Structure formats: structure tokens, C-alpha cells
Amino acid sequence: MEIFELAAELGRKLKEDERLVRLEQAHRAYEADEDVNRLSMEYAVQQQAIQNEAAKEDRDDAAIEQIQARVEELYNEITGLAVYKELEEAQEAVNALMEAVNNTISTQISGEEPGGCTHDCSTCGGCH
Image (cartoon, rainbow, N blue to C red; front, side):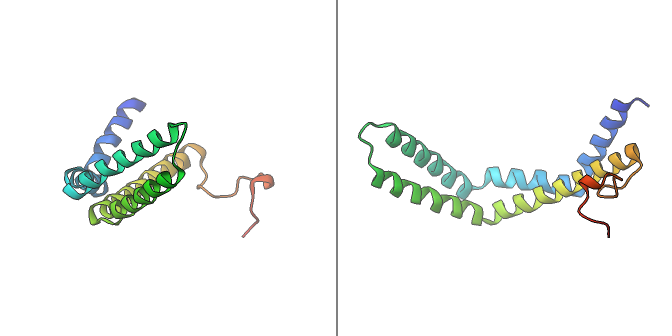
């Protein structure tokens, strides 16, 4: 089997993994969430308002600060939503999976465990 065929098969297997399925479901739920859409729309409008005000010759720094405070509130509201937290957790699980897969491939190529001794003391944090 060719390398790219193996990679395609790995991709298909990964797509079936519960962590990637969870991520896809979390992503769909996030995009469909009314609160996310409403808050994201206002967030974008407020960001544009900051840019518009900052571009003015006689810009109002107090207005910019007020708008920036609202942007921060919106960000905190979005990141506090359950659908956001689920998406973030699902993404972290997929990132960990992909790192483990990459480490497994690297180990097969190099013959050394990731984080193992490289026999180059300049890269070392000390022997254990």
C-alpha cells in the first residue's frame, strides 16, 4: 500500500473516532446556537465600530474604551456558553489525539520515543 493510501485510510479511521465525531457535533451545535449567533453578530458590529472610531481624525478615546468594554463583555458571554465550552473541550480532545498519532508516527520513523534522550546534551533539560 502506498503512503498516501495509508494516510487516506488513517484519515477515514480518524473521522470515525468518537473524539472527531464529538467535535463535529459540537461544531454544528455551536453554529446553530441562537445565543452564539446573536452575540457573535453584536461582537462583529462592535469590533467594526472600534475600527471606524479609531480611523477618525477626531476619534473619541472614551467611546473606544466604552465599545472595547462591551466587546470584552460579549467575548466573556460567548466563551461562557455551554456550547462554546463543549466545542473547546472537544477540540482539545482531538488535538490530544492528533498529537498522539503524530508521536506514534514519529516513533516509527525515528525509533525513539518522543521526549526521549536525543543523545545531544544541548537539547536536554537534564537526565532523570
